[in-house]
Amino acid sequence: MAFMVLSPFLRTIDDFDIFTQIKLGELILDEGRLITHEPFTYTLSGAEIPALGWLAQVVFVWLYRRFSLHGVQIFHVLLYSGAFVIAGMSPRLNSEKR
Image 1 (cartoon, rainbow, N blue to C red):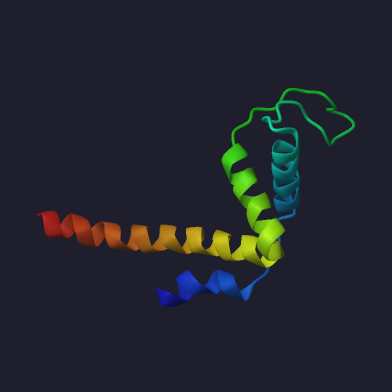
Image 2: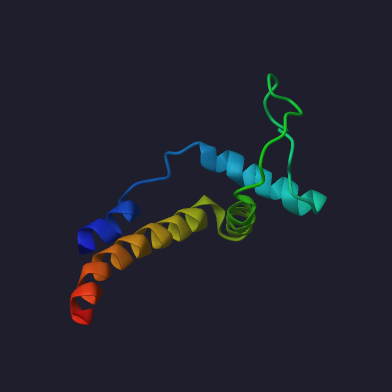
């Protein structure tokens, strides 16, 4: 289980969508409002988009501005690993209740 928890530290972030999320977070902080219209793509320019991930976007840009992409990676790995730890503890806690 320790390998599963720590293995994400061995690789870099390979999801290029993270840069879109960081840029949307920058727009939110710079403009002081949620971004509800597509600002990047030509074909969907101005189309409405739901502001679902705004909190994560703001957290990502805060981490990026202070600790670079490495800080975003550490945060991501901690959340990812925490989910594995909680999932691993779940059967144990259920068996103790019986």
